[in-house]
Amino acid sequence: MSLKIEVYMPLLPITALYAALLALILLHLAFQVVKVRQRHKAGLGHKNDELLVAGRNHANAAEYIPITLILFALAELNGASNLILHIIGCVFLSARIIHAWGFTTSKGLTHPGRYWGTVGTFVCLIVLALLNLYLSWPYL
Image 1 (cartoon, helix red, strand yellow):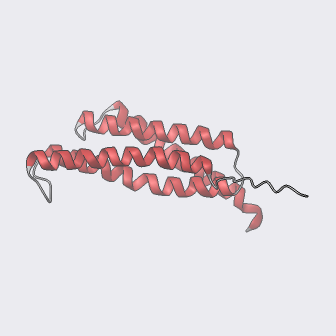
Image 2 (cartoon, rainbow, N blue to C red; image 1 turned 180 degrees about the horizontal axis):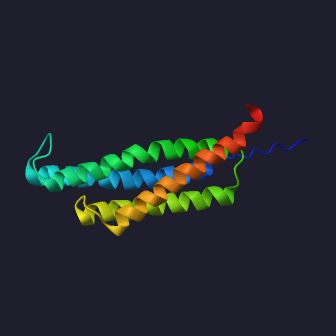
């Protein structure tokens, strides 16, 4: 008599963690746009600066989160260190939160949160791009 034990290991658990957290940020920013649209009765377009800032804040996150998560998933699939991925994930998550706060607070103007959020986002993209090149180079 043999006992069969099945172990389920989720694919890309680290990517899944940060994708879920970043999706919540994206949803929060989208809800801010909806709230401002309702308050100003603006179904389409930008009737005022508050709506423009909320819309651009959401759009900025939507521009950077997808490519970062794709690079993140590829690095995880290709054997990147869990520690390195968590460090990048924490920095990116923090950068997006800081950027959103700075963007909203400054109403689109210069703000330390916006600046450092942008720097953190760009650093994570550069590190992930280089990490993926390093991991895939032997197989090219």
